[in-house]
Image (cartoon, rainbow, N blue to C red):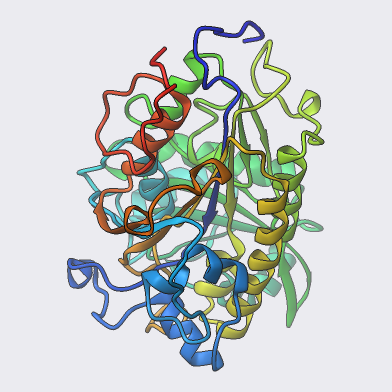
Length: 425
């Protein structure tokens, strides 16, 4: 991986992708098919619920031109290319959304379990892990399940197994009751069990700490056991071209490490944003976070997932927490833009919606925002910066390929202009 391909003049370009997890901008045309109301709109409904949102950096980039958001005014001179993306894959989950961004359209949805997991699955899990029983086995909020079963779990040491509206099997255990390595082993066993027709998108280890009435989930120690993408993604193409690709947050788990050269888990959005800034400023400790042999000593793609908007606030239907998270991201966005070099591209988008005002606790099938900013693109006309609705998250993969000047034959259409000096490697 250390050798570089020198015949591409775009070799020194970089791209930063910020995924604001669970951040939609209005119901997709097929929202009802996924059980969602036509009124779902994560950012618009959030702003109305809290009075207004003050996001000056997002506003300057054109977020207010994408959707009506109380407090985020449209501008006549947006700094960024902007529009909204419509997902075409069959799903509204993290894995499907991220895979589509990197060029894979999923026609078959991952299985979900609205009535809990079948008896034979639970029986096999009990046998292969050696536990005596499991608690819950139903779709439920992660905080509610701890309130219901946390104390009993601590008395017996038996795991809490549950699901949600997503294609997930989640296992919760208190860190003082079950060692982390045991919890991770249980998840590895569950990953082997959940194959074939039960091939869920992710098995999630949910360690928690604290005492009854004050249990707290531990974000940094969380682990997601996904499945490999069914075909190569743009990340694999970049990897083959010897680009450095850094995954921050749960990116490593979503792609099962495939196509990445470096990765680091995070415990909060703030940590993810700080690490992103470090990477942009070439201060990130790449040497201690390489996940392949002979990893390059620099990275051209920084791929960050900011999960708190989804996991902490969207699913919990907490509008105040969600609003504060957006304000925090907006603050760091100003710092990120200042740190960017002339040929750095910043793409901000999401993997699905998670309207904190909607009924239930599930994701919402929505359009997602698309913002693309680069100092070198500031001569684009205002008309060219308005993308409207783009069908397919795959346009992100096509645009990254254009930006880096590499050959791409997957689906999607680039929203980044083909510069005259660009050559295809």
